[in-house]
Amino acid sequence: MLKSTLSIIASGLFLISSCTTKAKKTEQPMSVHDSHSYAKPEEAVVKHLHLDLNVDFDKKQLSGYAELSIETNGKTNELHLDARDLTIDSVWADGDATTFQLGKQQPYIGSDLSIAIKPTTKKVKVKYSTSPNAAALQWLSPEQTAGGDFPFLFTQSQAVLARTWIPIQDSPGIRFTYSATIKCPANLMAVMSAENDTTLHNDGAYTFKMPQAVPSYLMALAVGNLKFHSYDQRSGVYAEPVTIEKAAYEFEDMPKMIAAAEELYGPYAWGRYDVLVLPPSFPFGGMENPRLTFATPTIIAGDRSLVALVAHELAHSWSGNLVTNATWDDFWLNEGFTVYFETRIMEKIYGKEYADMLTVLSMGDLRTTIKEMGPTNKDSHLYLDLKGRDPDDGMSDIAYEKGRFFLTAIEEAVGRKRWDDFLKKYFAEHAFQSITTTVFIDYLNAELIKGDKALAEKINIDAWVYGPGLPANCPVITSPAIQVAEDAAKSFLSGAKKASEIDSKDWNTHQWISFLRTCPANTSLAQMEELDKAFHFTATNNSEIKCEWLMLVIESKYKQGYPALEDFLCHVGRRKFVKPLYEAMIAKPDGKEMALSIYKKARAGYHPVTTQTLDELLNYKQQ
Ligand code: BES
Ligand code: ZN
Image (cartoon, rainbow, N blue to C red; front, side, top):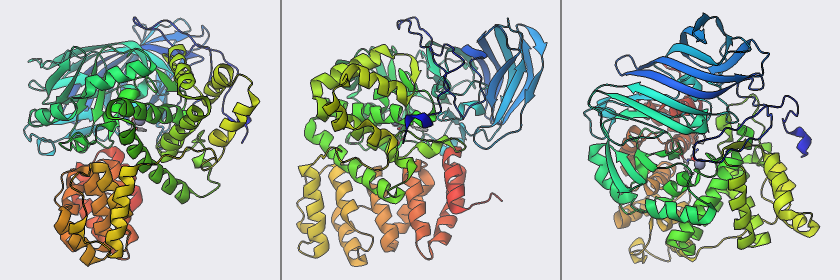
């Protein structure tokens, strides 16, 4: 595949990046067409956003103002914003009422909100409100929270959902600073992906400032009954009061992680780094909202075994938040770099054996994904073509794991020292910029490969980025600990060993995961019973182990596990868990009924991101 297929438009030069108080000013001239946004930044581009919003739990509505400071090309009479399911009340340009048009709403991308401005306009103010089913927002009743006494609201803006709660240029190539005034019910705390003061305000009024320019998909707000636990001067964790102690214990290595990350690729650029533990309906494992990672409570296992997710979201503070994919076709620049960086943080803190164990498990996932995609599927290229599709479709193991193994292959080719020096410089020189795949490749050629033909051949950029599947130079990682678990599973399955004879007292979560993954779909009911009796899988509180076990419960029709399956699906909304479980159910001859009967009970508790996926999967129509 040739680079000429890239949707890069060379004309219409404009400045995409912005500066901050802390970071050095780096302005990068470039123009990239983002097929998932109506914005025309080469005509008029948002530089600062001020939000003034009221949070109404009864109406499930945010309402108020978005005030946009813009820069025009001095010619245009229109500002184009993205909007989806928003009610636009009125609009002003530099204080005067102005006209606007809301185009026809399209799936995923919503409408073009075109506002009449003058070539000299500096400020555009939009009075608006959100819809109760805005896809970025989940409004939880008190019963849907851990504490049960107060309602909860959180946003999830990536990839193109910010436009369902803010009228904005919703493209990862456009960065702006922001400030906000949020009014919520007294007793509740509001936090944002911005400077937070960590305390409860009795009047429910909060102000925020985000002095560093960020793309819209990093806009985030949460409101709930929250407590804060501090680790040190720059990091801590927020959670509901009933969860805060467990959360504080689980993430105690956070300061170490930040230090390790800084040692690797340079200073943390965002001031504070905190984690917010959300209710279990949060559709993702984590979301790298700047200064405040949003995380699922399902990583609280009690033994810190699932904290790689925090390393991952923290790593995004460099790969993603500092150097950002310019379009969703370049998604691997965010996620592949982040998985690579995450693994380096894990290795630094917990050792190479531990990191390799996680990598081997991920490689298994990647191989499965590639097999399912088939040998010529273009979705297995790192550089994607998501035009006309939901950018969510790009969220596969390809961007994450193929991306990571590409970077690991380069590391193997040039050696760690040279590679780390390169990466450190890459982050520093592209800080606060949104870049395309070609910008990265050009930089790689200029700074690392430097015309060395043998090296270029060895790395084989084109095969990785514009070709399918896994190139021949894909690194091979092994893990003795994972091998032990797989071997034990095989001896058990062949009848050579009873479950009670497996020496598993020192096994960790990841060994259990690989043990269960080695058990095939046709594990017999007698074997399932024996396993459950020996290892109490049905009763486990470790979400990753539970999900693997429940897959087997479905495959083998192990009825004793059904109540646990239903209970899990009615309490957890993390898409990575629930989607495969429903998929496994409907793949069974008579499983569709069971899937639908559980889904009917569970659906009201899921986030719009999860219901969108599952409605489609189960062909579910709301009554
Ligand atoms: N940024 C992603 C989450 C995301 C990606 C949301 C695309 C919407 C669209 C986040 O950093 C992430 O990758 N989360 C993973 C966890 C990680 C450890 C692989 C998840 O939620 O599973
Ligand atoms: Zn990520």
